[in-house]
Length: 403
Image (cartoon, rainbow, N blue to C red; front, side):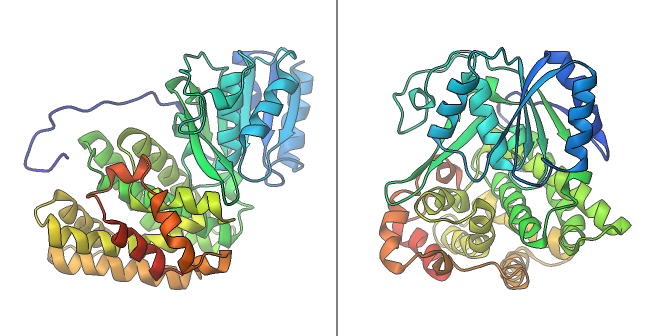
């Protein structure tokens, strides 16, 4: 891990999209689409953009320019079946470019579909852990990502997360550098319809990704700067965005959250995450819990457990100083010592959990009997970059505290 008193030894950066950030940038979509082709498949969510005046304006402009467009709605987290069925449906229609307009689920579906439309095979050939294990070489169709929520940062990543729900369920990734969107259009105006509950869940996802990236065992100076910038933006904008409305503060808050969410996608793609996202995988697969809700409801207790384990087993870990730095940043208390700053961070995260009324896991059917199965399935890629290796009991304790 990079620390302030040592020079970075080595690190890698993967591909990132071209970014167009600012109010009204979604109006550039017709020109962007035309730069890649004249036949487009547009994946949207159920309501935030599709069916709105903005959707009417977009399709009218596409029609005027003679661009052949198809639309498909993605409702809920995408499954391998949805991806495979869509690829079969549109494989022979001459699609040249894919556009994703929506939240993280729309982005994930679009990345997988864009990746497989040129080839026509099943995503299960490439899905990590459950597929055939075949290598994907690309190329993917060009993808334009237009997020209408501010949380997952999926517009900056190379993996498409697909889910099968139920007792034998899973959340696994189809992953390859060519799946990174070519362009990310980040328009805070598209967040205006997000209700407070969605802002809360998505915002806590972005915050968790930024914090877990900053304390990751693979942290590097490039991503450190981005994570701190994102955390600062989150701290300045989240509550105004959550309160909503059309005030200048609310508009600035939504812009800050969209910026923070994008940076969280960049940093997670480069350096990984931690225990919250390690647990989010089985919880989201086995139970009907939205990903952002999992992050929001777990982050305070996961941080507390991490800090206790670090103090006991790795007291010299640089992650301890980094947690303290985050505590000082969020509380605006530059003068407090590290121990007080770490405790302040945990206290603040617990306060947020209450203020945002984030639901407990039991409200989604999780019981103490489920904990062993959750723990056993929590040690995926995200858990591998947690600041330290947690014991099964420590992971169980995080879940137990939020039942």
